[in-house]
Image 1: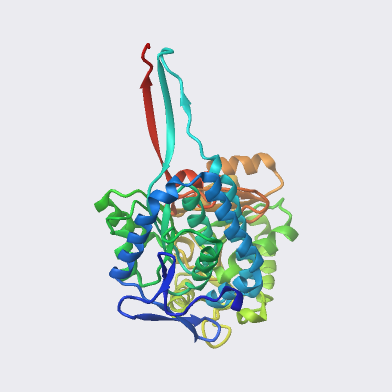
Image 2 (image 1 turned 90 degrees about the vertical axis):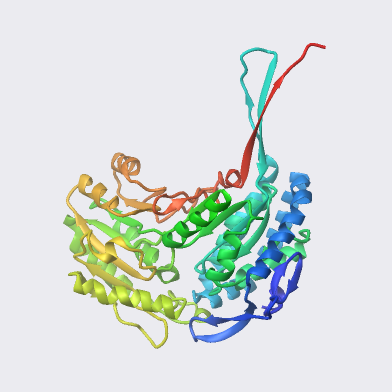
Length: 482
């Protein structure tokens, strides 16, 4: 890890590593061993104010920087990241508890996102508008907001750092990033590489801290011009309330309860491994995790049997063992998932496989519940663990009804060989993203991370993300005779 070392117990503010004003620190734990990896500085209101002040001081010069130069600097950052993939992968894997290969995948994704926005920095344009006579000219100019507050959770910190910080910087904003105190190490490592890349002081700032202290101080700070939040729906609502006090625009990427919808004509040999991976990758701790399996009644029994066998074969272990699945990230997360495991049978769901902790610590076996109805907690609420709920349907109409029978609207995956059926479902499902015969968006460059309903509103990491970090100015000119 030496190649991406950064000082322990310090923030990154104004281009330097500095201790918290009061000297406070937070322990960062390895979820596999529950032992302390290192310490990071614990931000309070004063530290947040220092970071926002630094970002505001740096903003005018950064916004005035030639966008091609901004893009070149962002690409230099991307180049340093790709050169340190293995070291960064180990940082993320150990911090979150995911297998090393999962950490490596996330770093590659983060690099791709940053590189994408490096190329997009000088492609941001306005429009020329039609006029009622040749004596008028109208056009628009996209402009950065200023200081962007970015608050991310612990599940995929490198990817979420890239998906929010890179477009904000490319558009000419400066950033104060608050990663989760549970897994802040990858964002700090990326900040260190940004320092080495040569970003001016104050353009990127990273402070760790608790939500009620650092998070509230950041989202309510009068020096913040835009807020991007990734996390729970409940916290998203609280952030919108705080942002309203300062009339600050907000983008929210919140929870999910994504269905895999499996029709009888689907290729089960392709679908079943993908469905299992969709709920066991990162131990199910993804907002888009395939937490619901809606399966045609005619193949229900076969599918449940095959999915259960595949889930029972999933190997769990610590990050460095690089098996199929790691532990849950924290004691609080373990308690939350355990509560759902206990509640589901009481509500009438049938446990097919899994259910009990696999080992000491925060490991949970991949779990499959059958005979789930739409009113049960595991069908409605986001578990954020490796727990899959099965429901069956008779026809396309019922499948559509079940797909939409949730407050969330993040991702829907449709498995069928009938293209007309797939297109009809894609049109009728209330979801920001739809995948057909795959899980998520593999193979598509610039795919937008869209969402609907209680999942929020965001374009994170996609082709339109740069626009989310700009405000449009309209200019109207009357041309005088001279």
